[in-house]
Length: 112
Image (cartoon, rainbow, N blue to C red; front, side, top):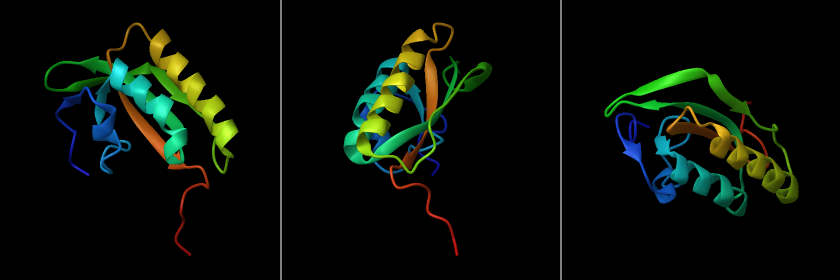
């Protein structure tokens, strides 16, 4: 899970490689792309944390946090949620980088 902790990623595919969730810093465009593609991959955007990139280093902004709908969700509800997430990213003018937390549409797996 250390991939992406000190790098600003410009490609949504980097996020979907399996190590981006909740740690990878993404540009605005890459974040918007993840939001658009997530439901197709069975994912819902749970949280977005915006910040400012200092190359290297991420300055988190407490005034730039968005929380999505908790799963379980069907694909249509996830797509609606993820559209709202993308709109938030596009409206967060003070931020140039973001950390995304996603969950499967079926919800988080819990230990028994």
